[in-house]
Image: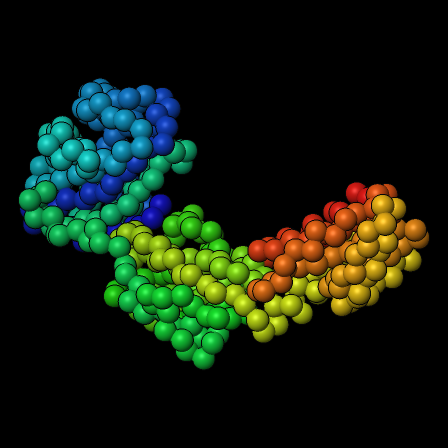
Amino acid sequence: MPEKITIYQSSAAQTYTCAYDINYSTLNSGQRTYLSSTGTDFTVETGARLNSQYQYKSSQTWTDLMAISVNKWYRIYLTYNNSNDLYDTMIIDVATPSTNATATGIPATIANDFSTIRFQSQTTEGQYYRNVSCWNGTIANEPVQDTTAPLITLVNFTSEGGQDCTSSTCGPTDDTTPTFSITTNENANCRTDDASNNYTTMSGTRNCTSGMGSTSLTCTLGTDDALILGGTDYAYLACQDSTGNENTTTITMNLTGGDLPTNATSAILAGVTDAVLSNPVTYTSQQVYVRYADGTQNLTRFDVVASSGSKRWFFNYILDSDVFTYFRQILPSIYVWENSTLTYSQVRSQVGTLINATK
């Protein structure tokens, strides 16, 4: 569950309300939602979602309350009055606030001590929660909900000495796992990825390396999410505030020069090493001359040339002002691989796969 809240119940008559938003991706029969505590103080079952109907339970009787749909947010309110041990419930369609249903006078039991209230479900399939809160009073006393996602106000590209790329392209740079120092307009947790996902979808392994829960965070793109070796690519910074509001910011990266040629060559060599070859020989920045049977000839320099037995593989990774050579293959003796806008891992994988498939 996303949150648990401790409420103190005094001996005097008191009214308080708890609320949360819930979304169902499926409407399987029998999946229940209820409010309970860690002990036995507050264990009343408050509701179930059965197929397309939301129901509430009074004693042993289920009462239809409101028809619901998949992939829509509904807000559940539970108002408890300890003077008569009764509580009322209300469900509101968040997308259509005028659509709501109530059930009143449902009995409950709660002791006059500290009670840790939390929202639970009988199964976790298809249920999503947000905006969990409790307060003294009725629904009318609900505090103003924070529905605004955190905003990144500054992106400092520390990989290039502190370049401000909040509203412009970062770079030029040869750093495929860049580090950013970011500032947000409210306390937030943030993650970074090479795919345009929200904070929830990005896994915890992509958390920013420092400052989580604050307005100043440092985030480094992991090696598994490395950017391409040359060209334009994108990094994504996703942040979430304490109430679950999320926002994703796109950072455009200009990758050029520096160590990128060396890194590309290294990726090719790693792919050759990964391949299963008998006594392979490799050459870097190797000039190749070929004369074809039709009398034409070709002279080209390749980043890497690999040989084993009677076979040769020529590899070029195209960067910046480089152009494709379209060097003609002579099968089954000479194979040519030329490519661009790939990550280190992709280059390595493609080179190894080609050699193993043609050796």
